[in-house]
Amino acid sequence: MDILQQTIEQITQPDQISMRAMQHRLNQLTKPLGSLGELEHMAVRLAGIQGKPDPKLERKAVVVMCGDHGVTEEGVSAYPSAVTGLMMGNFVRGGAAINVLSRQFGAEVCVVDVGSRLDPTPEGIVNRKVRGGTNNMAKGPAMSGAETLEAIQTGIKTAHELADQGIAVMALGEMGIGNTTPSSAMSAVFTGRSVSELTGTGTGLEQAALNAKIAVIEKAIRINKPDPADPLDVIAKVGGLEIAALVGVILGAAARKVAVVIDGVITGAAALAAFRLEPRCKAYMFASHLSVEPAHRILLEELGLRPLLHLGMRLGEGTGAALAFPLMEAALKLTDEMATFADLGLPSPAPEPEA
Ligand SMILES: Cc1cc2ncn([C@H]3O[C@H](COP(=O)(O)O)[C@@H](O)[C@H]3O)c2cc1C
Ligand SMILES: O=C(O)c1cccnc1
Image (cartoon, rainbow, N blue to C red):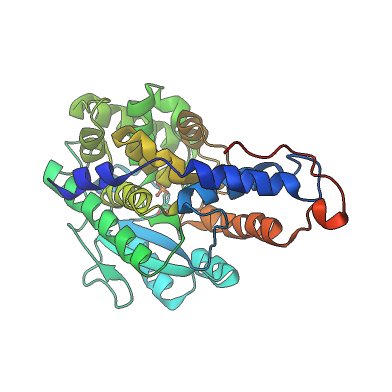
């Protein structure tokens, strides 16, 4: 059996008993029932994911998957393809936005080269290059089926390595100039919505260039005919290497009972692909923020996930996802440190959980 199938079969439902225990604890705390809103849902979900009534987030990581895109030759990004490699150097030196946020929140940054054009892969970046960039999807499939599987396996392997190191939550990030194009294409194929409704300006295209980007995506879907019912076919034909690797990270993390935080539209497209491969992985996903890219809202709706933050961000790298770390930590700290009604000598306002 291949690694992908094995991983999918390892994904189970979160632990209901731990979730009930956490909900019971929340109900005893000195606050009106349910008044901590999403923070309460997060605490309950983390208990279920970790299978413990007192979940912990001692170690956190941001996984930044990097890949280049052949479709950039169609002028779909406001920036040249070489910026992918330049930013990879920036990640190593600690100067990118994601480095700053990770330092602030005490998270590790794991940068993986799955498919950049940069050669050699700089020291400090995990070299798991499947190939140096995809083919131009406006002319044919972005990748072969074998390359897609290899990139997904890279993500699974990365998730296992991080889980082995004791990482309790993985924020998903990516770097790949042009990658809002495959993300919109995948979103259109998976949801059946129109490309024009889903596609945004990415790094900042002008209106004429946005119209051209929409036409390129429509052409890629027309000529490749990805099968909406076959997520691997969709990723191969109109996806990307780093997007495939992110699908692997999500499935691998879910198999290891580790929470994953979705970032913007690119990680969102990977999340919907992972969900279509195995719906049970959704129980391990958290949505961090709502990106400016129009497809992101549709992707999160399709997944049934509510974003925690609305900051008008459109950066990627895992920056929105990292911002969820302090909120998750706040949720758990509240459940650990708040007094209960019993501490005040008052009766509990909530019924005991069922045995
Ligand atoms: C300097 C710079 C840093 C970035 N960090 C993330 N992205 C983001 O922008 C790219 C996607 O947008 P598009 O599809 O329009 O190219 C991805 O690399 C994404 O991570 C960046 C883009 C730039 C220019
Ligand atoms: O939604 C995102 O994360 C995003 C949007 C534009 C460009 N890069 C990333």
